Length: 121
Image 1 (cartoon, rainbow, N blue to C red):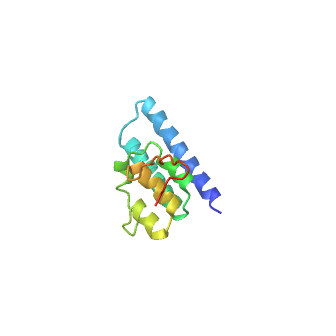
Image 2: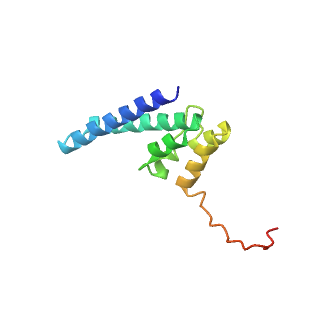
Image 3: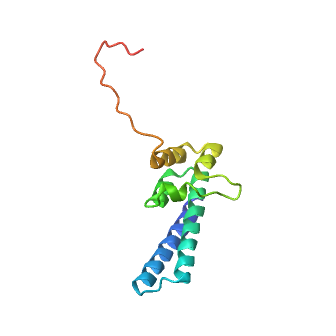
């Protein structure tokens, strides 16, 4: 059920990006290009909120690739929730982890090397 919409959104975003690149190469960077870029961001934003709702961390990571945290951190849904708040509210732990790692809120820690007989408590 979740596969088809994600593919459609990805294909739409790819087509929009290709059209933008084509226009920029030809020197068409006026208001129409700005509107297209805004539409592209809106599609990506909606797809990210869908990925968080479905707790699809892989899709979320792909969608946010190359999008600065300063940009996606400001995105809000119609209820006024950002991606992190939505992930917390929905219990989307995999998506929450992706968002925290991308924002610098979570760092991987190295585990200490334990020797046989060492007390760990």
